[in-house]
Length: 435
Ligand code: GLN
Ligand code: ZN
Image 1 (tube, helix red, strand yellow):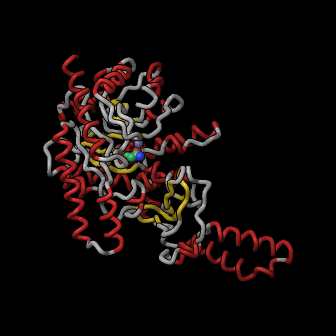
Image 2 (tube, protein in one colour):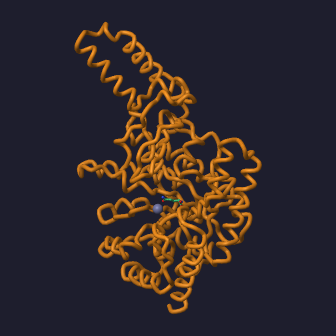
Image 3 (spheres, protein in one colour):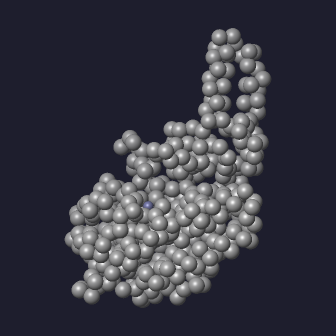
């Protein structure tokens, strides 16, 4: 989405590592480079000797910098084998084990991960960033928000809970900040869509994970409830697609490095007791190249990366994924090849037409087609959601279906989310009673 835009001025970035900075150029610097080339063309190389020497020096440090090249990562990349890309058993076998483990009802209800990032949450984050709220105070605040979200989900009657993601500024930034190989800017804004702007992480070096990233928040939230609580991580393809990516190795390789780091996280979550782990791939579809001839290659390494990060767990651990704007008809093979236990997708606005791909293609695993459009403040009633589920049932079997909103709820308000989810749970219960 953003690959074409470029932030304005690198000189504003006073906190970037000087080496990393010397390898980058934003718009102002690129215009400077053009001017240099102009001078060179007009008057010869000597005209720009200093600038060219500095540029050459930066290229050499980048080629040899230990911040860019990590031997351990290279070793792990070389050691990726087919066993790391495959769950231990087939989906049919896993589904059986998981069904026995969780004992969920038909049409189990869940959400996509985030709950409202209220003004209060954003204010606390800003105060923490400014230093007027201490680390301890902020953590306490986030714990209270999380605990309240868990209680609310229990009251609503959802079957599978989430922690709410209150600690996350953004689903990619949150992980990028904890991984080696990423840098962040203060002013590197680029347009995302409309008036929405983001500061993309800069992926400049080999990626590794110094320590667990999402385990503690999951552990805290799960300690508050007996219901299964899905752990949330962002997937490698989405992290890659929503970052500026180094150009000295292929994107596929950078993506597999991230996949190894996320794989470590997924395994740590399982070890800590997480029974369901959702690996969000919101941006997998949007990374599809415009040229048809390149799509197969992209999907090949994107799916491969997903399998690497998701296949290190036991059969009884349920892997979920979530995708936005899922126009699946042309990529349904790739979706199936991800071999994820449960996928949630956006389908409500299209009235389940996005499920057309599933008419002719027998998708084998579980699916949660979104039944509630979270992009609008409107609260759908239970009858409306039941109608959407009825449409989904024309294309998918009851055993395959789970019930969830279209996407994360962070942009909504609690007074919209609560009634909508109550209606969603009512819809699922009514259908259960009738079937
Ligand atoms: N888990 C994320 C959330 O709920 C997923 C967001 C997304 O797909 N864009 O916010
Ligand atoms: Zn989404």
